[in-house]
Image (cartoon, rainbow, N blue to C red; front, side):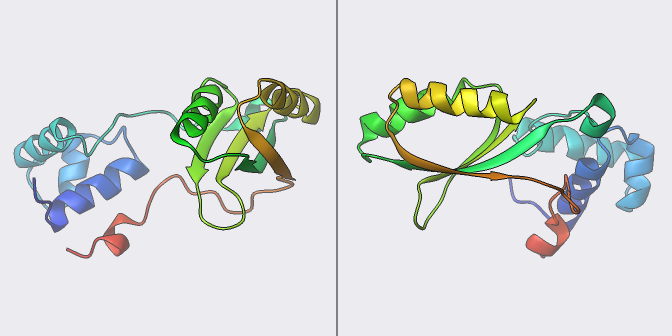
Amino acid sequence: MKLDRIDIKILSELQKNGRITYVELAELVNLSATPCLVRVKKLQAEGYIGGYSAMINMGKLGQVLTVFTEITLRNHRQADIARFMSAIQNIEQVIECHVVSGDYDYLVKFVASSIGEYQSLMERLVEMDVGIEKYFSFVVLKSPITKYHMPLTNLFDI
């Protein structure tokens, strides 16, 4: 499926407000409701829309700790990488894991209830012997900018 500027605009609007009505969405992208609905269904069927979810205001629930962790593996064989990934993907507190270039292999984002919980997680990971050579932790003190949507119309000028 080749996307056009209307498809990109639909995706852009849906990521900002997944609960928008098709009538409201159609107005924003300058379509009538039925063709807009057809496009959204096609975008879903083609996998461009992976699902819908609610953005939870964690501050309303209570204190949480966010930690970015740089992780370097001892070895980079396929089996070592698979063992590490298998362990990390089963940790509920891991909300992002990125393979990166530079001085370390992975940048992992943890959300924990406390520094103690985070440290226990890291100790358990090291004890599991999943190939971690070293790790560095960066505790988030404040997040003055947090966006939940990508600048699609800027990234994909169609």
